[in-house]
Length: 207
Image (tube, rainbow, N blue to C red; front, side):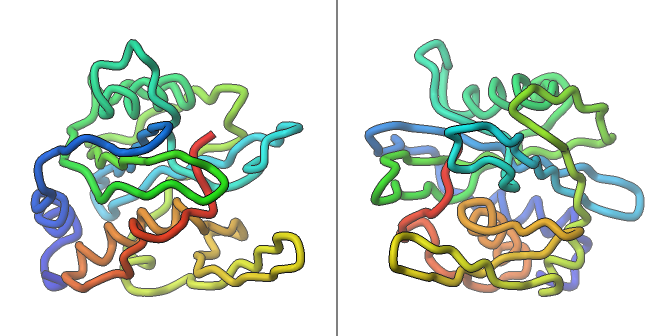
Protein backbone atom coordinates (compact mmCIF):
# COMPACT_ATOMS: atom_id res chain seq x y z
CA UNK A 1 0.00 0.00 0.00
CA UNK A 2 2.97 2.34 0.62
CA UNK A 3 3.49 2.79 -3.14
CA UNK A 4 0.09 4.43 -3.59
CA UNK A 5 -0.52 8.18 -3.34
CA UNK A 6 -1.31 9.39 0.20
CA UNK A 7 -4.93 10.14 -0.67
CA UNK A 8 -5.60 6.65 -1.97
CA UNK A 9 -3.80 5.10 1.01
CA UNK A 10 -5.98 7.16 3.34
CA UNK A 11 -9.23 6.05 1.72
CA UNK A 12 -8.21 2.40 1.71
CA UNK A 13 -6.98 2.49 5.30
CA UNK A 14 -10.13 4.03 6.74
CA UNK A 15 -12.44 2.16 4.38
CA UNK A 16 -11.43 -1.07 6.10
CA UNK A 17 -13.03 0.08 9.36
CA UNK A 18 -15.65 -2.32 10.77
CA UNK A 19 -19.24 -1.22 11.27
CA UNK A 20 -19.99 0.97 14.27
CA UNK A 21 -20.67 -0.76 17.57
CA UNK A 22 -21.74 0.70 20.93
CA UNK A 23 -18.98 2.65 22.67
CA UNK A 24 -18.46 1.29 26.18
CA UNK A 25 -17.41 3.70 28.89
CA UNK A 26 -18.67 5.59 31.94
CA UNK A 27 -18.32 8.76 29.88
CA UNK A 28 -18.13 8.91 26.10
CA UNK A 29 -16.35 11.27 23.73
CA UNK A 30 -15.56 11.60 20.05
CA UNK A 31 -12.75 13.32 18.20
CA UNK A 32 -12.20 14.35 14.58
CA UNK A 33 -9.11 13.55 12.52
CA UNK A 34 -9.43 16.20 9.81
CA UNK A 35 -7.26 16.10 6.70
CA UNK A 36 -7.16 18.53 3.80
CA UNK A 37 -6.29 17.34 0.31
CA UNK A 38 -3.97 19.98 -1.15
CA UNK A 39 -2.33 19.81 -4.54
CA UNK A 40 1.09 18.82 -3.21
CA UNK A 41 0.31 17.71 0.34
CA UNK A 42 -2.13 15.94 2.61
CA UNK A 43 -2.30 17.85 5.91
CA UNK A 44 -3.90 17.03 9.26
CA UNK A 45 -5.38 19.57 11.66
CA UNK A 46 -3.97 19.75 15.18
CA UNK A 47 -5.06 22.22 17.82
CA UNK A 48 -3.09 23.67 20.70
CA UNK A 49 -5.24 23.91 23.79
CA UNK A 50 -5.40 27.27 25.51
CA UNK A 51 -3.77 27.66 28.91
CA UNK A 52 -6.56 27.46 31.46
CA UNK A 53 -6.30 27.17 35.24
CA UNK A 54 -7.46 23.78 36.46
CA UNK A 55 -7.22 22.16 33.02
CA UNK A 56 -4.68 19.30 33.20
CA UNK A 57 -4.26 19.40 29.40
CA UNK A 58 -3.62 23.12 29.09
CA UNK A 59 -1.26 23.86 26.23
CA UNK A 60 -1.30 20.30 24.89
CA UNK A 61 -1.56 19.46 21.21
CA UNK A 62 -4.78 17.63 20.41
CA UNK A 63 -7.46 16.77 17.87
CA UNK A 64 -10.81 18.60 17.91
CA UNK A 65 -13.45 16.82 19.93
CA UNK A 66 -15.05 16.35 23.30
CA UNK A 67 -17.72 14.68 25.37
CA UNK A 68 -21.10 13.48 24.18
CA UNK A 69 -24.05 15.82 24.65
CA UNK A 70 -27.50 14.24 25.18
CA UNK A 71 -28.74 16.15 22.11
CA UNK A 72 -26.15 14.52 19.80
CA UNK A 73 -27.71 12.07 17.36
CA UNK A 74 -24.66 9.81 17.48
CA UNK A 75 -20.92 9.88 18.16
CA UNK A 76 -20.11 11.33 14.74
CA UNK A 77 -22.46 14.19 15.58
CA UNK A 78 -20.47 14.72 18.77
CA UNK A 79 -17.20 15.03 16.85
CA UNK A 80 -18.82 17.38 14.33
CA UNK A 81 -20.47 19.59 16.96
CA UNK A 82 -17.28 19.87 19.00
CA UNK A 83 -15.26 20.72 15.89
CA UNK A 84 -17.71 23.49 15.01
CA UNK A 85 -17.56 24.85 18.56
CA UNK A 86 -13.78 24.68 18.88
CA UNK A 87 -12.52 25.78 15.47
CA UNK A 88 -15.61 27.03 13.61
CA UNK A 89 -15.46 24.27 11.00
CA UNK A 90 -18.75 22.71 9.86
CA UNK A 91 -17.72 19.21 8.86
CA UNK A 92 -21.23 18.30 7.73
CA UNK A 93 -21.13 21.12 5.18
CA UNK A 94 -17.54 20.95 3.88
CA UNK A 95 -16.13 17.59 4.97
CA UNK A 96 -16.41 14.01 3.77
CA UNK A 97 -16.54 11.45 6.56
CA UNK A 98 -14.34 8.54 5.44
CA UNK A 99 -14.79 6.25 8.43
CA UNK A 100 -13.45 5.80 11.92
CA UNK A 101 -10.50 4.37 13.82
CA UNK A 102 -10.38 2.07 16.83
CA UNK A 103 -12.15 2.98 20.05
CA UNK A 104 -9.86 3.94 22.89
CA UNK A 105 -10.23 2.51 26.37
CA UNK A 106 -10.70 4.70 29.43
CA UNK A 107 -7.66 5.75 31.40
CA UNK A 108 -7.35 4.61 34.98
CA UNK A 109 -7.92 8.13 36.32
CA UNK A 110 -10.19 9.44 33.54
CA UNK A 111 -13.11 7.10 32.77
CA UNK A 112 -13.71 8.26 29.20
CA UNK A 113 -14.10 6.08 26.11
CA UNK A 114 -13.17 7.83 22.86
CA UNK A 115 -14.10 7.18 19.23
CA UNK A 116 -12.10 8.93 16.45
CA UNK A 117 -13.70 9.77 13.10
CA UNK A 118 -11.72 10.64 9.96
CA UNK A 119 -12.78 13.48 7.63
CA UNK A 120 -11.37 14.74 4.34
CA UNK A 121 -11.61 18.33 3.05
CA UNK A 122 -10.85 19.53 -0.47
CA UNK A 123 -9.79 23.06 0.49
CA UNK A 124 -8.14 24.51 3.57
CA UNK A 125 -10.80 26.42 5.55
CA UNK A 126 -10.48 29.58 7.59
CA UNK A 127 -10.65 28.55 11.25
CA UNK A 128 -12.53 30.52 13.90
CA UNK A 129 -10.96 29.47 17.17
CA UNK A 130 -12.89 29.39 20.44
CA UNK A 131 -11.43 30.54 23.74
CA UNK A 132 -10.50 26.91 24.43
CA UNK A 133 -8.07 26.79 21.50
CA UNK A 134 -4.87 28.83 21.31
CA UNK A 135 -3.90 27.82 17.78
CA UNK A 136 -4.82 25.59 14.86
CA UNK A 137 -1.96 23.96 12.97
CA UNK A 138 -2.12 22.19 9.59
CA UNK A 139 0.63 19.56 9.53
CA UNK A 140 1.82 17.69 6.39
CA UNK A 141 1.57 13.98 7.12
CA UNK A 142 4.18 12.75 4.60
CA UNK A 143 7.14 13.18 7.02
CA UNK A 144 5.20 11.46 9.82
CA UNK A 145 4.28 8.58 7.51
CA UNK A 146 7.99 8.23 6.72
CA UNK A 147 8.86 7.92 10.40
CA UNK A 148 10.39 11.38 10.74
CA UNK A 149 10.10 13.88 13.60
CA UNK A 150 9.86 11.19 16.28
CA UNK A 151 10.88 11.98 19.83
CA UNK A 152 9.92 11.02 23.40
CA UNK A 153 7.91 12.83 26.04
CA UNK A 154 8.90 12.53 29.69
CA UNK A 155 5.83 12.39 31.94
CA UNK A 156 6.16 12.64 35.72
CA UNK A 157 3.38 11.46 38.01
CA UNK A 158 4.12 11.36 41.70
CA UNK A 159 7.33 9.39 42.13
CA UNK A 160 7.08 7.86 38.65
CA UNK A 161 8.82 9.14 35.56
CA UNK A 162 7.59 7.64 32.30
CA UNK A 163 8.63 8.04 28.68
CA UNK A 164 6.05 8.10 25.89
CA UNK A 165 6.57 8.07 22.11
CA UNK A 166 5.85 11.43 20.51
CA UNK A 167 6.43 13.70 17.54
CA UNK A 168 8.21 17.04 17.57
CA UNK A 169 6.19 19.25 15.22
CA UNK A 170 7.56 22.78 14.89
CA UNK A 171 8.74 22.66 18.49
CA UNK A 172 5.44 21.32 19.81
CA UNK A 173 5.27 17.83 21.30
CA UNK A 174 2.41 15.58 20.16
CA UNK A 175 1.95 12.62 22.51
CA UNK A 176 -0.67 10.64 24.42
CA UNK A 177 -4.06 9.98 22.86
CA UNK A 178 -3.40 12.30 19.92
CA UNK A 179 -0.21 10.42 19.10
CA UNK A 180 -1.88 7.03 19.46
CA UNK A 181 -4.80 7.86 17.20
CA UNK A 182 -2.58 9.29 14.46
CA UNK A 183 -0.07 6.46 14.82
CA UNK A 184 -2.87 3.97 14.17
CA UNK A 185 -3.99 5.88 11.09
CA UNK A 186 -0.46 6.14 9.69
CA UNK A 187 0.22 2.45 10.35
CA UNK A 188 -2.93 1.54 8.44
CA UNK A 189 -1.86 3.80 5.58
CA UNK A 190 1.55 2.14 5.52
CA UNK A 191 0.00 -1.34 5.62
CA UNK A 192 1.77 -2.31 8.85
CA UNK A 193 0.67 -3.22 12.35
CA UNK A 194 0.74 -0.60 15.09
CA UNK A 195 0.76 -1.22 18.85
CA UNK A 196 -2.70 -2.00 20.20
CA UNK A 197 -3.03 1.50 21.64
CA UNK A 198 -6.78 1.10 22.07
CA UNK A 199 -6.29 -1.54 24.75
CA UNK A 200 -3.82 0.57 26.74
CA UNK A 201 -4.51 3.25 29.32
CA UNK A 202 -4.58 6.70 27.75
CA UNK A 203 -2.53 9.44 29.37
CA UNK A 204 -4.42 12.17 27.50
CA UNK A 205 -8.14 12.56 26.95
CA UNK A 206 -10.48 15.16 25.47
CA UNK A 207 -11.45 17.95 27.82
